[in-house]
Length: 336
Ligand SMILES: [Zn+2]
Image (cartoon, rainbow, N blue to C red):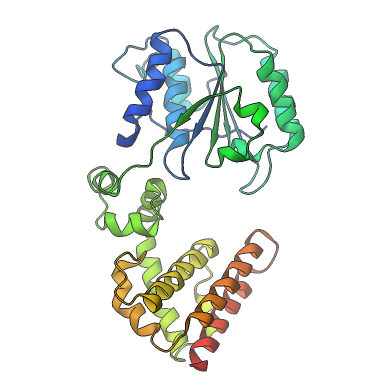
């Protein structure tokens, strides 16, 4: 069973989750905690955090209405240490892989035993849309025979991909998408981020991705990649050497950044005064880069980038993949 401990997790809500929390609190106050919840919302909006807060609340033996959990009782201490026996986390073994049936069978066997603390038992399962067919069927059987005080919290950014038989047995809860202002304020005040608006834009509106980007110094990495990218374009840098120098960077991020530049170049080619760009800080530079390229070339390159990104989860050598992207880019620029 794939479970992850949350050693340093503290039960704290993101500012944009307050209303959703009220709904969850109401379930507790009225003694009507659903047997299964389906929490949906865009990637990086904090679904897992919300589910963890709810689990902490249910497992706290001294909870009051004003706080998520007391932080001091035995239940809270175990939750914080990531060792509470009645909080079970099930995750896909790897990104893009399905949750196998054996994982759900293991869970069912575990649920057949009595709860260790005679309180709630909570299963946080994500991403719920990655259950394979057999696993979904096994889970369905469990949902059809509810066990008292056992709460399933299914998380998904693609709830439409869940079998209807499962989603129809869940109480639905949608985590709202925060406004750009809300996220910028949060990044600035709580995370000490200097360029919150730019990061939010670069993270495609995902607050947690923006926070990760700030934490990992990704703006500086992106700047380095961008200067190499321009050097390859004007022929002053060798793509093979550049790819070797960039081997430390995550190829997924690199392809994401380059894809973002191409999308902005397409926008600028179509409407030179385009108001919304994903990379507003690079506007004037991208405008120069796009000057002699036509839309067909740009779309062609974007397609090629998409094909290469499909190879990300295979055994292809990432440095060679990046070499190909850069060689193609240099070739394209020399054609014009
Ligand atoms: Zn407590």
